[in-house]
Length: 169
Image 1 (tube, helix red, strand yellow):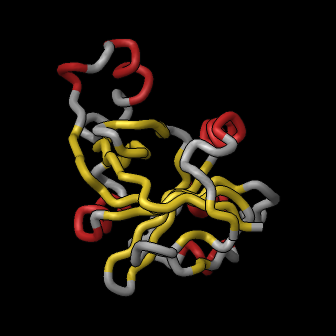
Image 2: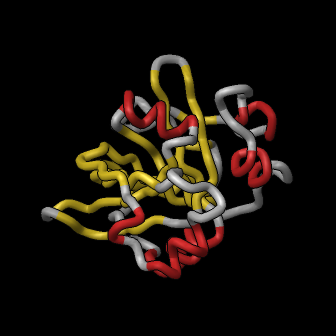
Image 3: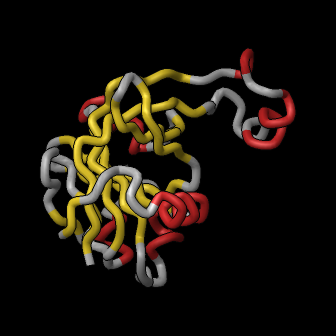
């Protein structure tokens, strides 16, 4: 493990994030990971942050509401063939997605939530703010594109302070 600043490999990390990264959270003995392709790495309130968007209908949302922390894994290598499909489409409410696609976890360095045992960049994030979004302030074209198929299933923004960042091989 190599500890790095949150903005290390920024261009590479943003490229990976735009394709597929993994957001993981844990509460009690329940661990869930989901695929994300939207998010922001930056600075707010003088803190390094990651802003994640999670729909209220997701099991990950339920766990985040209780855990108030999450990790992000940006994979630098090959993934098990079913990882994107299972973690992106299946629900952790009804199955152990990690076992189903052959992924495992490593303990977080500073938080209770683990990181995926994959080579790549890892962020450990403590939720410092959350806010549901709604139609009233959203550009109409974006609303039509992303939210008309599932009305009233808008995302919740989770702003997580990045409390640790590192690369594993």
